[in-house]
Length: 405
Image 1 (tube, rainbow, N blue to C red):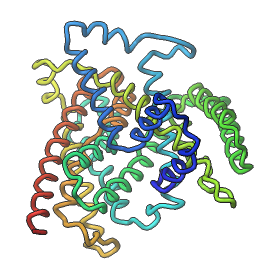
Image 2 (image 1 turned 30 degrees about the vertical axis):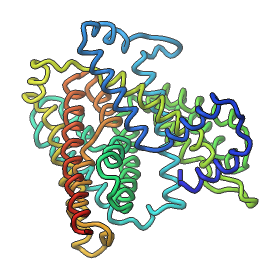
Image 3 (image 1 turned 120 degrees about the vertical axis):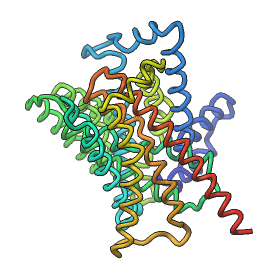
C-alpha cells in the first residue's frame, strides 16, 4: 500500500484512538509491521530461533512439530503454515501488484521489469545446467527464481539507508514483478492433479467476490468468508491454495469512492499487512527453516548437484540476470538508469536479489518434499547474498559520502 494511503488512514483514525496504553502500543506495533524492513527482521529472528532449536538437544521436539495434524482437512502444522498462512502473504502481494499496475510506477518502469524477468530466467537456466542428469532434478527449476523482498529491504535499510530512494524503488518494483512470476509458477507448475468440480466452485466464489467488490459492499466478514471458501475449494481441486490469496488480492478494488473514501484495497492492506509480516511469514519461516547444520549435513549440500544448483542459481544467476537485464535494457535504448544511481549501486542491489527465502522454501518443499538439503541450500545462499550485498552497499555508501564531501 502507498505511504499516502497509510498516512490517510492514520489521520482519520488518530483522533478516535482510545487512551488505553495497550491499544496505543498495539497500533504502534501494527504500524511498524507495515514496513518491509521490520517484517524482514522478524522473519530473521524466527529463522534463527528455528535453527537454534533444530540444532539443540531438544531437536526431536522441533521435528515432531511439523508433521502434527491439527484441525480439519487433515493438514499438518507445516501444511497449514505453507498453504494457509502464506495465502495471507500472497493476498497482500496481490493487492500490491494491482496497486502498482493501477496507480504505481509499474506501468512504465522498464528497467526493473526487464531486470526482474531476466533475474528469474537466468537462475533457472543455471540450476538446470548444474543439476543436469540428476533424476527428478528438473522439478526444482523454479527454486532459485524468487527474491525475498522483506529480507532484501531489511538489509538495505540496515546497511545502506543513505542510498538514494531510487535504489529502493528499483528493488520494490523488481519485487512486484518477481511476485507475479512466482505466483504464476506456483499456479501453473506446482499444483497437483486437478479436480474440475471444486475448481469450478472456486471460480464461482471468486466471481461473487469480484461482483460484491464492484457493488461496493462494505462488510469485511463477507469477503473473509468468500476468501476462505475459495481457499478450501482450490485446496480440494488440487491447485495450490495460496493462489486463492493472490486472486482475492487482485480482485479487490483499488478505486475509492467519489467522496474521497479510501479504496477497499487500501483498507484491506492496512489491516492484513501486519498480520502477514508479524504472524503468517514468521510462522512459516520458523517451521520451514529448522534444519540440522552439522558438518555432515553441510558437506552433503556441496556434493549434491540439486543443492548446488540452488546455490549457483541464487548467488550467481540472480546477479547475472538482474544486473545483466538492467544493463542490456539500457544498452539497447529502451530503458534508462536513474540520474541518482550508478551501475555499481545496481550491482550491489543485484547481489541483494539473491536472497531467496519465503517463496524459494515454499517451491522447494513442493518440488522435493522434506528435502532438507534444499532448505539448507536456500539458507546458505540467502545468508551469503545478505553478507556480500551488505558489504558492497557499505562500500558504496562510504564512496558516495566521500565524493559528496
